[in-house]
Image (cartoon, rainbow, N blue to C red; front, side, top):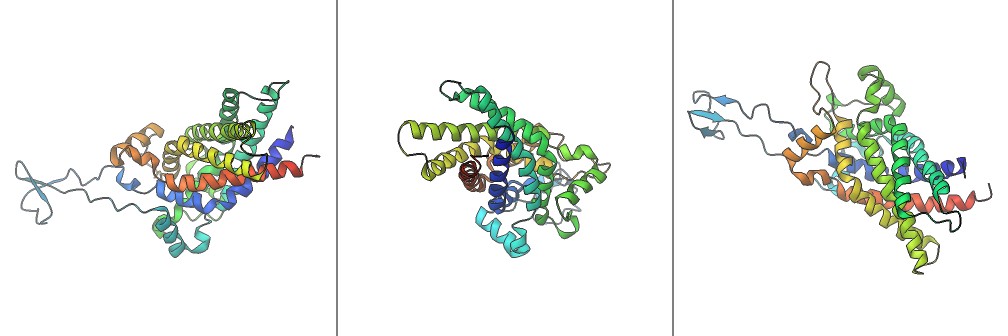
Length: 326
């Protein structure tokens, strides 16, 4: 197998990543909705004497003081309206913001994880039956995903930032020209370590996604064939891959939301970062927006993860057929 597994996995991942990029972009924008309300409103606890409290919307408090109420958060937009807004304000090109980072990310991250998973499968499979128990499949996915994520983190940070840029006011946009420009600017302005910002989250998410996605695909496919429900062909590949995509979406969405927010946060020189880490981000998000905020963007996540997983594995099966003699 060797390098062949890396090549096959890399080709399939790049095709799947590029074809579902607009859905990933919508998911990122939705995950960032309401984030500005995660931090406390600095005016929330300001008290005004009655002489200055002339606004009729202020609320009287004991002791003759007035509290300025926090403004309500804007209504949350759904995936269709988010997609339409991107199209209307940024054009078709806006739906592919950060696609160069997606290509680099899939080249680094997915090529590594897919290749390593195949290597572990070959080493750990029963030599007589050629099968691999579910527990070992999960272990192979966890290890392969973690290593792949560590390798691909700089491209992941660049991709999140490039995808999120269009939602910012023009004066605040980073305006990266490409993934290379994004990575070089981050290294210059924020230090090389910024390229691994959120890496613990990326690694955790990748371990969860790879274990749930690759292991469940293999398990669903084996079960379908063993039960004689379908023959080994396109129908089996699509069914097993969509089921695997659903499992991966449910398992990874909370980590994905926190990862997106930590990677996208703007750290001004001399100012405290909005989040001190993953746990701080999770607590602030849940406190400000409720626990279901961790499932923000779930519809576009499953809408993207489903097709991505289908394209990934269907393409992978076809690439394997083409390269079987090599």
